[in-house]
Image 1 (cartoon, rainbow, N blue to C red):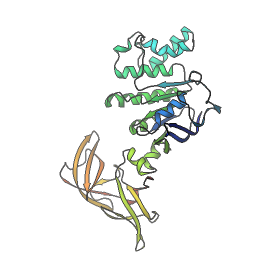
Image 2 (tube, rainbow, N blue to C red):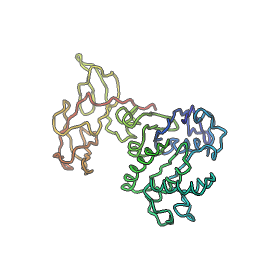
Image 3 (cartoon, rainbow, N blue to C red):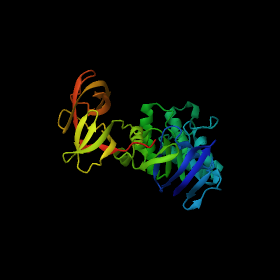
Image 4 (cartoon, rainbow, N blue to C red):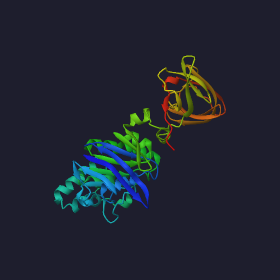
Length: 347
């Protein structure tokens, strides 16, 4: 549906987009993820037609969009601040795009009713938007963006202004609405948990470039670099040199040497220990003793910050297990072969 090819955009000589290329399939939800300044919002503006790329191609079903104005692209855009019209009630806000398209009144009213039912606001038609909660306003903004049946819906940090509990609840609703409607979407966020929950595919940006793209599972299980791992919250990275000694492959680290699978590549890498790969006790072949620095209850899981030989790690354990308290010693173990070898980023 949407094809982005070698897109470049500079501001004052600095690259905001540096050769981006990827595609979005019909009905797919693609999350654009990255830190501030990575190019997420710039890309959204270029796709919407609010900004023009310096070079590269943007097309929809094979049609070049370079000279197509914003109002003719058939794309919808939902902002973080929602930008609702205070002088219009809920129905008036949702109907705005339909009015601009000169849709018949009866058809418009039916579409507004359908969308308010979809977003859980049936019966809110005459409510003033100023009387709504933040979550309700977010739903109105979503319904308004979807009302004209956009070919592509773009959401720019749509949950960023909400508190965490409300954000998590609405994220599940948003995912359900987009999937139930088959809405092709670009979803911009800096929060990997949001991207994991909502996206079919993630595109991770850094300084205007794509550093990795794939399904949420692929990025979590196989981060392409230490930057990707750290951005996704996988910061248990251990500087390592894989050597061969007496016919065995060994990982030489600051917390000890561990035998690795024979297929392990030699040289300097970072070993990634995912929070869920380490076990309490000495079941694994690599055994470590450390000290619990911090203990955080997170419902079914308890997160521990642990120091081992001067290295600090974060691990998750089932809450019902005998998890030591802060200041107490802890014995943990893992299988070195399960640790992912992650390349360091180019400087």
